[in-house]
Amino acid sequence: MLDKPLLPHRMLHAFQIAKDLLIAVRDAGISDTHLRDQAMRAAQSACLNAAESAARVTRADRARAFTIARGECVDAAAALEIAVVCGTAKQADADRVAVIANTLVAMLMRLIR
Picture 1 (cartoon, rainbow, N blue to C red):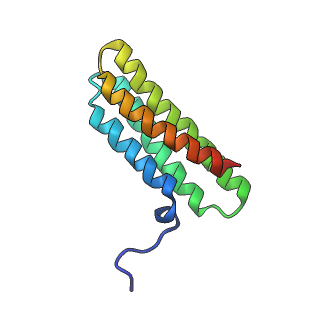
Picture 2: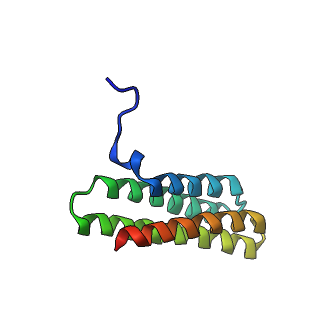
């Protein structure tokens, strides 16, 4: 018996990057509760949809889940940008999230096709 089951999402590099996005959003410490909640929910959804896609059988089902993950990734990054404009987050944190989000979006675009 394996110590850690090899679930399909664990082998998906995009899921690992989505987790990095979630950690970066969490660590940003957005002080506006609404924007923090929005950014966290979007980052969590990006992770969950990337994971879900790995378990889908058909190409169309996988592409649909990857597309949703891409949208949620952009939503999380945008929430950080808005928080910076509102003065409730630091530019350095938004920049870190943007770098991770750019990587994830590029990966997801390749997986959608």
